[in-house]
Image 1 (cartoon, rainbow, N blue to C red):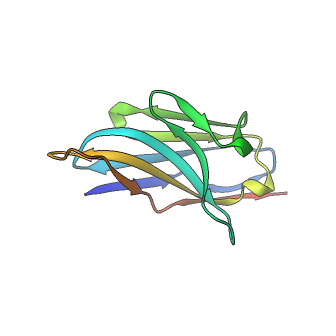
Image 2 (image 1 turned 90 degrees about the vertical axis):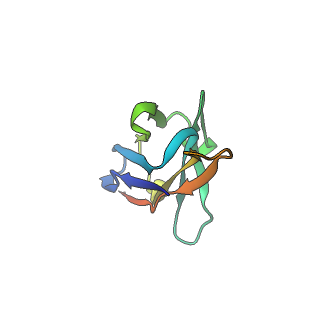
Amino acid sequence: QVQLVESGGGLVQAGGSLTLSCEASGRIFSISVMAWYRQAPGKQREFVAGINDNSYYGYSVQGRFTISRDIGKNTVYLQVASLKPEDTAVYYCNADVVLLGGRQPLRSWGQGTQVTVAS
C-alpha cells in the first residue's frame, strides 16, 4: 500500500558527491520518520541518517552527509559528499507511515540504489 522509490545512485570518484532521493507514494496519511540505511557486500545493514523533527546521523557519515525532507512531496534526500571507497553500498530508505484509515505507523522500505565510489 506504500511504495518507496530511491534514485540518484551511481559511480563517483573518491571525494565526489551525490544526492539520493526517496519518494513515498500510496495511501499515506502521514509519515513520522524517514531514514537512510546502507549495506555493503558481506556486511550488515547500517544506519546512515534519519529525520523527523530533527536529523541524526551514523558516526561514520557525520559531517559528510546531510539528510533533508520535503514533507509535501513525501520525499527524503541524502546529500553525500567527500565520498570514500568504504561508502560503497546499496543505500535504502525507509519510512514510518500511517496509512489512510490506519492508526499505527508501519515501516516500509525501498528497493535500494547502488552507490559505488572509485578510488
